[in-house]
Length: 158
Image 1 (cartoon, rainbow, N blue to C red):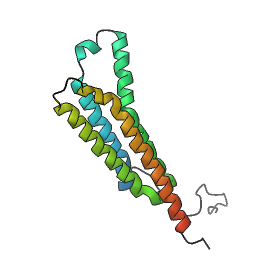
Image 2 (image 1 turned 45 degrees about the horizontal axis):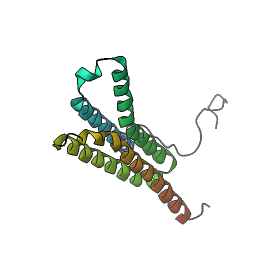
Image 3 (image 1 turned 120 degrees about the vertical axis):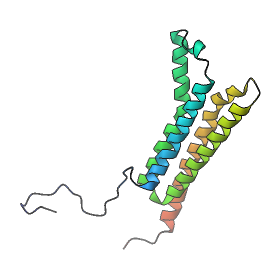
Image 4 (image 1 turned 30 degrees about the horizontal axis):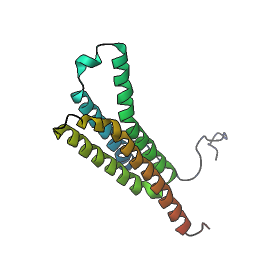
C-alpha cells in the first residue's frame, strides 16, 4: 500500500482489531479485577491497626508486602483478561465469567471476615490470594481450551 506521493504507508492492510479501553468487553475484563482490588485495599485498611504499622520500618515494609500479596491475583486477572481478549477472542466469555467469579469470591470472603466474631477471621486475608489465584489460573486454562476447541471446530479458511 502506498500513499498518493508514492511513499509506502505505515498502515497495515487487513482488518483492524482495536483493544482500547473504550470497548465494553475490555472495560469489564479490566474493571472487575480493579474494583476487586480496590475493595480489598479498603477492607485491609479498615482492619489494619495503624498504631502498630507506623511503629517502625519493618512494620511498614510488612504492610506493603501484604498489600502486594493481596493485590497479586487481581493483577493476574487483568493480565489474563487482556491476553484472552487479544489472543483468543473466542474465549472472552470464559474470561468474563472468571472475572465475575473472582469478584464474587472476593466480596463473599471479605464480607465473611468483616462480619465474623472470631478473633482469627483476619487470617483469611492471608490465604485468600491462594484461592483467588487458583480461580485466575483456572480461568486462563479454560479459556485456552475453549479457544482451541473453537478453532478446531471452525471450517478451514479458503
